[in-house]
Length: 424
Figure 1 (cartoon, rainbow, N blue to C red):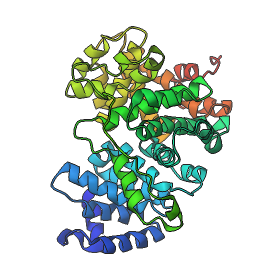
Figure 2 (cartoon, rainbow, N blue to C red):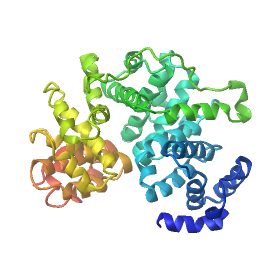
Figure 3 (cartoon, one colour):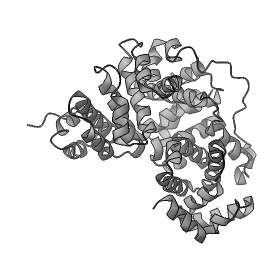
Figure 4 (cartoon, helix red, strand yellow):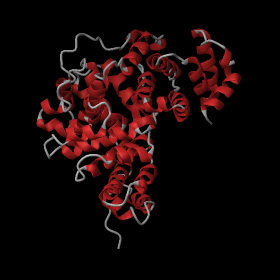
């Protein structure tokens, strides 16, 4: 159903074509009524009507506030469903979807709630931002100086090795939470990630901290996560009122988050042990510095030391996925720039992001099938296999079946990426 049809449906919701946005108390009552019936399509239509604005930023702010309110009182899945409906018809919403899912996750947990229950109410929509938001909300409320609380959180919400993908969302979210709660002091946040016991958890946490640094430092950003925490702190706290608000107390940010003279900063200035995670997240900063021009962006990656250069290209691919809004032809065009020896890593970034968005390997396989034959396609399918291993770390039969779905062109590299023996 397209936006025109959504607007037609809005007549059933609230004669939206001819009316101004609803007053807050009327809007809340309407949202509550629709949420009770689980009508995510009508809620998406109401959001589209309520948040019609002249400027992009004003519409974004309005939508953030809408989803903060909608996600209250255990309605996480309803809010995510409405967001998915709206994003399917409005490309700008899909493009900013990760931020909106952060908002929903932040609102899904309040002091006094069971964090594991809130965490499992999320889904993988738009790169799993809801999970990260729950963790951010918890960390900013409960504090980051308690190392025991920090290192045991993910053991509480995702202890089973069979849920490796879910655990990643938690430890990655810790990085976001540390960075925000420490007022975007990146070195301090990375130091908190060092509390974690194993290298896999630490690297995942580092990635969350670097991602938070990149998002929060964008030019003109009002940072949806901070706004969401402010909103949830100001909202009625019901039986949690004794805990008070939990928005971070922001002072002057003392750490330089970006360097306009160096597209590779902060990676170029961080300790070597953090650079693997950093370069995996650097693509957005690089593309911002080149005004989205991929040829110039790959030239920046070509300045990176060979150890980390593949990761720099991969990070450009991650961003290519978002910029192309998962339109295969556009993403392939973006990744066909730069040194042919490193182009495959860009395609790896695209396809891993595809699967991160939906947790469905078939979405990645369809992209790989569209990639022209050669090394780029082969490594694309290897990356699909690697993602399958994260989604199904101990279920060999499941990995076998999924890689078989890649067909003749992709099964062998998929099996290689998924740590399966070559098929005889």
